[in-house]
Length: 175
Image 1 (cartoon, helix red, strand yellow):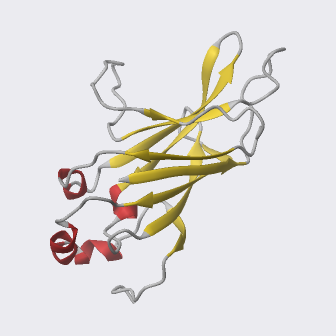
Image 2 (cartoon, one colour):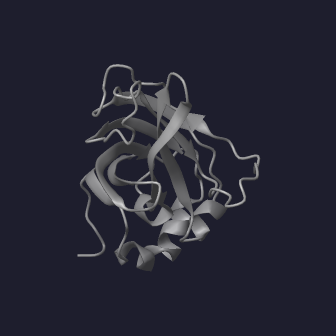
């Protein structure tokens, strides 16, 4: 799976300390759920560069190739996890928020097509923030997608959490 972290909008600075007036945001991406006990799970994590100029509306355009097997698409609870941080000079990274990209939002688009998705950023406690993160996702290297599309066609009409911003126009089976 190819994930491009395009930008974020409307971020809020959560700290009011004397050296924390400037946001220097970056995002981490993983396909493994966070461990409540804080144990390391040997799961690859990807990180965007720090945007020193964007402030509350950063742009990255960083592209990552996240290895996902077909088992990821068999569980409707599978997600891509994004965590938004700001880099502080003294205290290091401070979490600004997080969001999840559910597998049901990714679905099974035509091979190689690009999906643009936007997600509301959640605060550490799960409450909604005014911030939004914008992504582009492309499935790559799946030979079994066509077979799975037929068996999962009924799942495509279910309610999803995220809100796709733009999608390549094609005839929908859910009309």
